[in-house]
Image (cartoon, rainbow, N blue to C red; front, side):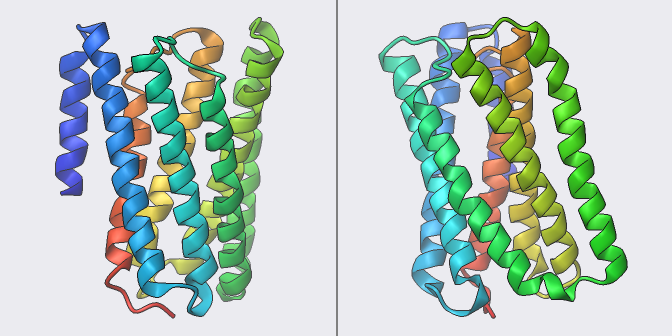
Length: 245
């Protein structure tokens, strides 16, 4: 089903590119449907496993993050489709997007605190180096566009905030990958890590696109977001059947 969702979303984007009005409605609908399903599956994980074991707070953080992003996507769609606001950025939707980073970062940090001791010294050095490399490369990649583009102050604040927060998520995701690599719960977490990685890349691309002016609502780069949500949803679905520690 996840594979079908990936293929179907790609086909929809391809077919609607020549029709801008249908493109906005169609893609905004996908961005309500897919995160909505993802947050529902996250809720089922929290409902089933609650706060038991070392994963309780982590699951809650991931669910709250995806739910807040779903609300943000819904607000974005309402602004575009019903209020006729072209690319509502920045807008009230960004409040929900940014708020979602708080629980997901808290959950990831709890995960690392609980399981970080399993990392070997070599893996720890490699993971930490990867974290810093991601943060430095992201900052370097966007610094020049931020300097030369004439966006308003509010837009620039969000253009800085999103990549900064996403680079932290990417770095923590690398640490989490090294912690769980080869473990019996690795399958579900691998999909969740991949989803966080893809959504973070989508945010970085969005910031760059709005700064340089090539982004438009329904741009194919949005598929990275959708694939990220689908990946997280798949991880949630697998976790519903796993015996958690």
